[in-house]
Length: 230
Ligand SMILES: [Mg+2]
Image (cartoon, rainbow, N blue to C red; front, side, top):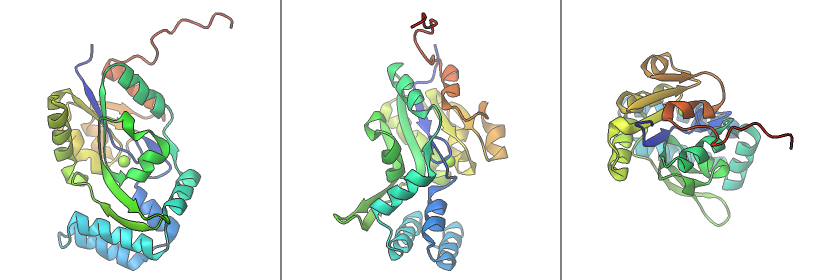
């Protein structure tokens, strides 16, 4: 029996492949104003604007380029795929009675394009709203990105009433360090960050998310009996 009762997943690079950070992919693909994008990024990391202001600025830049729900989803269909084994992993965890959560600075539209959001017990993501024509009509930023991902895990633990040391976290990059640092079981999935690789108790280098299951006390299948010639 595994002690881990909830598994929190990062999204970009963890549940989906084809993007390291969806925001960068969106700006590159839709060729938003590069100079203003750099300035806003600097302003955020130098503490001159809030995460919310940075998020809203991103939406503004995308809207200026005429980006809609339809063109965003077309881009996702072209560039992004669910990680091998992701759907199976989520289903097996649920069947085994685990709770699952998403804790990411990515976008809700990425999650809902590839997965059924109702499968997740908690979803902490940036949300983008569209009007009836598909045009960007606003959004709601996540309070739990970057250094604040640690607070996100705490909030998931509190909401589900599962102690932190029974929360596993799966991530792939530097922006996951704060969450990995506090989770009971930090798992690095194809890590792009050496620091995350060092911090993690489990490192998966193959692109197969089902490889996390044994570390969570969950088997890939209940009955592995060989097919009997059928
Ligand atoms: Mg990631």
